Image 1 (cartoon, helix red, strand yellow):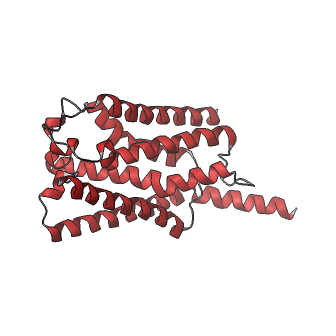
Image 2 (tube, rainbow, N blue to C red):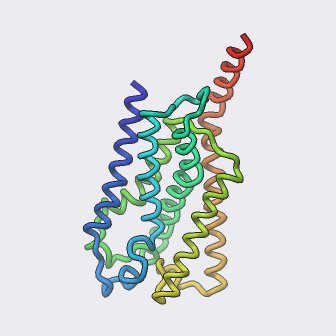
Image 3 (cartoon, rainbow, N blue to C red):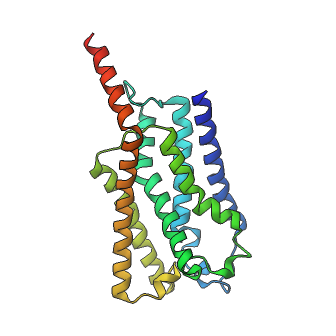
Length: 239
């Protein structure tokens, strides 16, 4: 029964994020004269939210493949390649990116929504799509933590992957500004250069903390079970 519930959750999660990407690219068309940044260079790919939702779609599709052809055991005797890929993807990208996007977005919305999602976008960007992209990413990745075990990679490997993605995105948004003269996020426009540097460094630091939080959360949830399973498997080998 657990296996069926797990694959059911993964199918629903993958479908909701795939639909979010499809709807956003197909039906969400914001005129450039409404909000300048939406007509700027980079298309939909200038937003970290879009990067994250695509990453969540890929991750939960990997989960489905792992459910069918890999293993969801706490400590498999031989860890299938699918399981290793899935575990790394969730540790390095899935959990920290989802939490980063959700926490930063809703924090800035609470301060001043014009900094991240101007009210002028309401006729073009439905409220339910907003929640799929900024709320359900957090809910889904936390549920995944609760229901499925994973093996975290070496911290240097996990951090390395996350750092590569985040630094690539920082280079990307500065390239967009170079090409169009428009910052992707309005909050960047109201900050002076020194404050912008501090702001970006703080965000990178926060994202690193989210990686460690994911690692710690996984240990809290699955640490005892993993130790018990490891001891059991060692006893079987010695017999």
